[in-house]
Image (tube, rainbow, N blue to C red; front, side):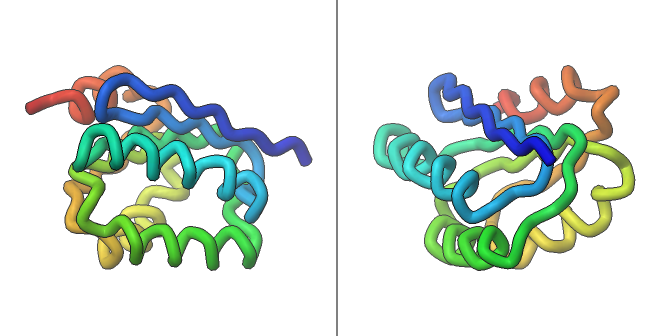
Length: 120
């Protein structure tokens, strides 16, 4: 199964596109970029876009939990864009680990997610 992560930063916003299953290795390529953004901008916003997403490996879940505990105050807004089947689980999974406003959007509403993540 192909897996990929593409990260684009624009000011304090990171747009992260994930395809396939999130592994520890893919996750480790993401965290230094987030650390740098936080260092440069303080609180940041993340637009997390999932395409053909198949969840996490155990190693990636561990990395995610460590990341969430480290950065739970550093993320101001988190927009999650993906298939409807992930909505309840992703929002519930993310909420205890962040003080951020978290909102889920279907793929068809990527423009709405972008507007929300950039709103003041």
